[in-house]
Image 1 (cartoon, rainbow, N blue to C red):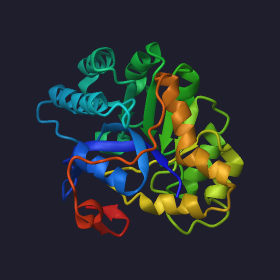
Image 2: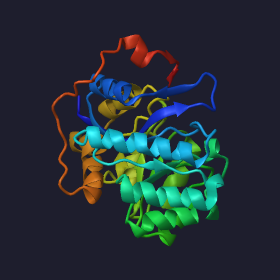
Image 3: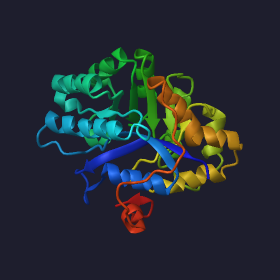
Length: 286
């Protein structure tokens, strides 16, 4: 089995779902250790606590920054989170967390945060652009909006999360963003059983193998299902290695040139049982 680097990893609690779902830094490390994941780009969970408004966002961002400080070999860079409803104070918090905490950009989940991918994000993206940063954006309808962002903010590197969760999204991302050189793609939650019109081979053939990356979507999904798809795909081993971790290493090194992956196994701070790590409802983790 190849080593894996995870570009789509959430830490914290999603309280806008029943039951509540989430994970600590320690449980994240334990799940990584059990599945040969050597590192990750962490970001806060979407739908997190917001009783205190932007102060809760700050706490979530600081959790990611602390994880990166404590485990720089495993979490070489991290992303914050933004809530467009916070308006200018949210923009200010993003600037603070990039300047003071060292985070390199943000992730956002429009469906859980109640917005589209339109002009409401421009002020936040402008902050990231001034730092030549990174954004992980979940698809919200057509990826045409992400292609527009990529053109408007050429100094930002974008990751489209869940690029192939369904056939429509898969084909749309190829059409809209395939030629955008500052857009990368993760295959988090790619379902099993896709036919050749939208399987992993089709994705490689149409997007190339240099910007496709593994993503876990922890703590929501049993990412071992995606690992199995990569391991068994009708692809050259060299291409599998790129998707599994080598492309992600190149991406990280855009922001931390001195970082090199640590291939030795992770020793998690707590020993979790298999049930605690992988208790699932289908592919979904509780």
